[in-house]
Image (tube, rainbow, N blue to C red; front, side):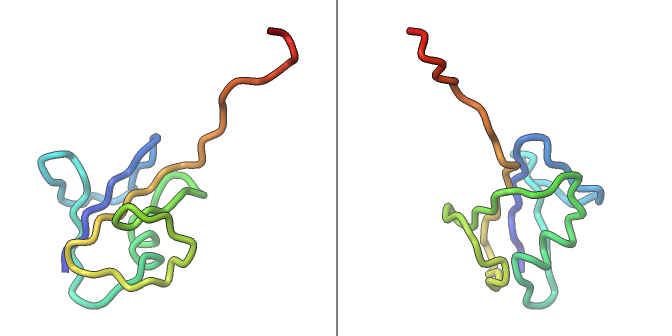
Length: 87
């Protein structure tokens, strides 16, 4: 089973994994694995992060991955304009 992992916002894995032409990680499992198990295997440099599986934001990381799934990980982002009443 192969899963593509896209890391955003400075997230990096402490381990080496094969990459596709776009530079995304390609993780291959011999047995059934959950999103949580995959994240643990990545040994990421930052936590927490937002988890998106096939375009859907996840709250349950115990979902079983399927061949061809695409997992995207984003660090939480804050920012924007501050409304100080001066316009």
